[in-house]
Length: 616
Image 1 (tube, helix red, strand yellow):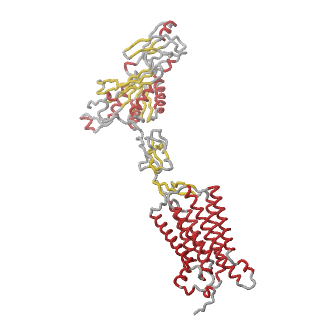
Image 2 (cartoon, rainbow, N blue to C red):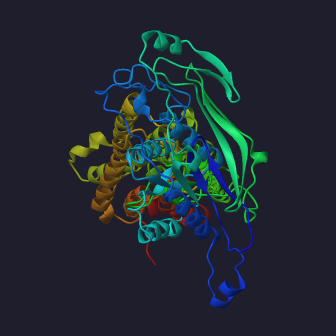
Image 3 (cartoon, rainbow, N blue to C red):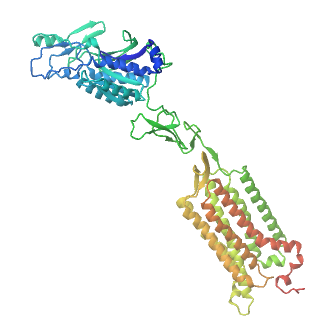
């Protein structure tokens, strides 16, 4: 087999190997003929396991009851020696192994290795080391792929070794932590001598220099914590080179120093960059982590954030909702301003509606001009001229008030929209109701001895108009006082858009205004229906009946349509209802009269209006 350098690591006197190997190596001619190919990872692990299994040992910790004369050790790293009750005069020149897992965790974090395995000796040291390593690795955010023990010979058979090898080779982790002892450090060396308080006192204060740095002891008899990070280069079993590439130091004040020179590291030739060892690849911004069921926290799936939420950092567990006036971009990694929309005058829909409103306003103004020009003719005088003027003026304002619903909503426009609409429409419907009541009174008064003679005139209709309008004014005033409409934004109707609109404040007050207008319209319809059989030439009850039928049909259809419409189309729906109902009143009541006045002037006579004309 060709000699291929393989990178391994050690962090101190104990063999803490981070084993790496990828790809396949060349085999001998016999192996090629047999078609046997093994990955570099398998070859390295088998070689390490064979060497490692025969060089494990466990510390014999005295019980503390028998005399203990060993004073200084340069190999004992067990943390139990720091117990000053059991070992009051014990000192060591090697660091306490309790700090070693912290250095390993920092090394793993430095390279971004979050998915690793552990191999330790099957004794007290190995068990404690495995527990501490697992705790520090988990604390640093990494996860364990496996945690295996290696027994000492002769209890560790080749079959057990193959089973361990299978666990390692079948794992997806590319980094394995091997915790054990090197061959030339298989025994502890202690200094013997009589236990002396004087010696113990001087050992506490000893301070000297070594090739590795200054040496001193703390109250537990431990030296400064220092672990060297060594790059092992395996060219063959007999050709192994070592290269120090960094260290991990904890000084007397507890400050941690981690130093590593990446440029001095020699990796396996199969790596073109620093190797990776993760259970799941990092979730990029725009995705969130979803833990896999019954797997460690390092194993997860990356799920895209929903609309309106983002993650701006990698490996975020939860998506962050965007502010109300913002929306997530396509990559879901940043919030961008929403597209602002409202029913503007220059929009196609706004242009159509404003053009229709302007047309009917001009048309109504023309009808009013005709009525004023021919105000002394019998037809206009017979149909309550003053109420006709009031109705036409209110219809003109109805067409104009629809324009208040367009444009960018403001506090003033939101207040004026519904209140002006409600009051002006109430005046229009009340005028129609007054015309109908006046028509009925005038017909009843023609009978001899009728009590309705004293009610004939404009006083009844004027009082009725004023009373009905005051009720609506009261409702609108209470609405503005208790829960006035206000500018609001709609972020749910259209994805990624923010629709500016007026919030009605109170739905109850809004439907009270509409309901009151509907009540007046229903009264007008009933009154006109009762008066429909009056002489055809005299009354306009049939025209009022038909106009109220159109009016009520529009607003009855408006309510469910309005409740099921969102965004700017809700505003367009209300404008359409205002225009169509107003146009219905104008067309049904006044267009026939204009037809007679302009095109059939022979019918605009007192005899014809009173029904005394001769029918041909």
